[in-house]
Image (cartoon, rainbow, N blue to C red; front, side, top):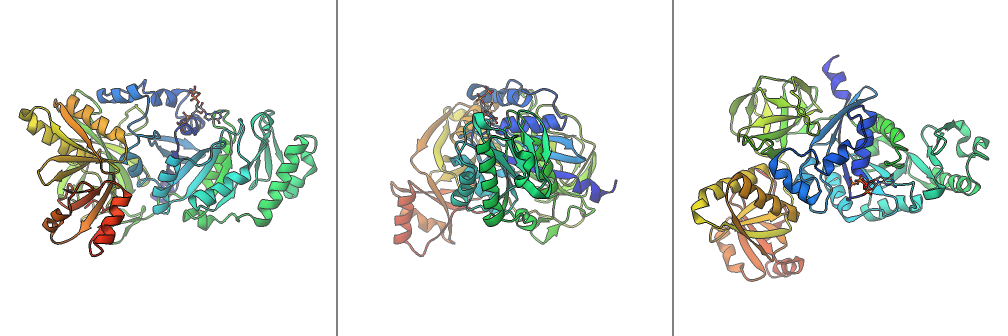
Length: 522
Ligand code: G4P
């Protein structure tokens, strides 16, 4: 098989959802269909961290949530599919956002009764910023649910995302009788596990009389008349641009509507495409190998202080043992230790292609956003975005003799992108995070990996703004109880404000100061 075929077979997607919407259950069903796992409960066990191996993942066990993310690969209908697992808890971190920079599409799982919840909205915004296609799976139809027309309207009203129904539920809860596939003109029955092809007559077909309850049939015919007449048309181009979301209904728990979703998804979702660099684009079919690191996970094995870098391959073929250059430093290195990232099973990867994600063991060379290539020319992928932190705390080593360990830990965790690190004018370390769990993981890792007890004091700021100025010193005069000046990892000045109101009043008083929400990682 040539490289083009191998690339076109590949799909990378992430699942975004609010906790409890059914992401784990859906992932599990997809993996079962792909034969990647044999038993239901495998992913759930991982979610409950029964399988967590490394020590610091204790924190996952204690909290019963998934702090880290990995990649699950499976094959289905001749496609090689990678699901990027994103932590779904409220206390998620920047990691969750960053994972979404490596995917080619996203699946948004929504609880049919609850509709769009806070976390889904945040994650949706990250996908939408990047213009990636978003597929919607409305889950738990086996329970009481909102009117499906209302759910579709909500996508438009709350997210500003136009949608087109590909499948449609026939009833819900106790009255749930199945789904109708609008592209295949076929009804799939829930309890009877049968399918009825309706042909050109679609839902008007008499084949449905007596099969569905009268009220479900009437509702189905009414909804289809409405959608056929006034709904959005199925427009592949708009879907690929992330401007129209194909919507599917089902029950992940009952494994109903999942196969229909998966098969359409594989047809519609895009294979790996070109990726922007600082000087142009890299095509997946380019011969030279290129890839970028979007996640670094430390201490996979507590006996060795190793780190695993997650590399998204963008072009060329990865062959274990190949020589590459780390673009940021120009350093040459041999990639001899590479691994699949399937849940907790690690298996050496010898060959991989554009559209694959592999793990590379790292002894401290890599940073988030690094480009690796075997091209003679220098290639830099566009920097990964940083996400504005909303929580801050001041941190120091309890024992000043541990200062060196403390500095080293802070430095490495910042490099991993586990937390954002700032310094104030007294050279004190200020941490910034998007979720409180990031602080807990930070503390846990400093104690356990760097043998340093720390003092953490949360500070009452919630908004960070980078300042474009040639004279950072001049910003000191603005400091007061509602505004603090700090410097980021790259020595760039950042003003922290207590709240949006403090920011607004600062801007009104200082119109000439340009404040920006986030500067890209350099
Ligand atoms: P998450 O990863 O998005 O957080 O959600 P998860 O899959 O863990 O699902 C959350 C709860 O919702 C689970 O119940 C799960 O069984 C249930 N669930 C998922 N999909 C469906 C569905 O299609 N229909 C129904 N009725 N329930 C569904 P739990 O009681 O919290 O866990 P468990 O005891 O079932 O393990």
